[in-house]
Length: 208
Image (cartoon, rainbow, N blue to C red; front, side, top):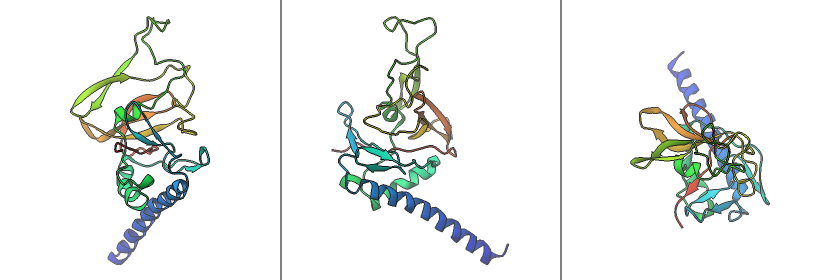
């Protein structure tokens, strides 16, 4: 391939990628322009403000319409600057990917957390825990919901039409820079995956 054709191909790829990012931006911008307050939810326990829809969905009246956009971990990180500069949802430009602890905090089991074998009664059961990164240390959180919990494992009236699938967190795996933590909302599993996998994303902010 000649140098000229290589440059043309490279430019085409850049345009396609920019179009993808811009397309998601326009969807999100149109989605939240009129109902930005209703499209957000503040968790009084943590003080975090969440987007009720995943990126790619459209907020309409009292629900999230359409299909979320699946991205690699790096695409999710790169998209943040576009989102904050072009959309600034709610007048804020500090939206970010949640940490794994933050993302896991919005899981909801309508039955109970998964428990160790041999314990059937809730008041005698031992919840299965998993250690995840939390700033400079680690934190033990419930591993996942019981298999008889309703899917998706999230509060539906707060986060309507959430895909029962993995969402990216901002937390990379310390021992493996090519992997990052995610939460799967089918059963509420916390785990880490290759950063080239394509998952959904939901943004959060810490400010007032």
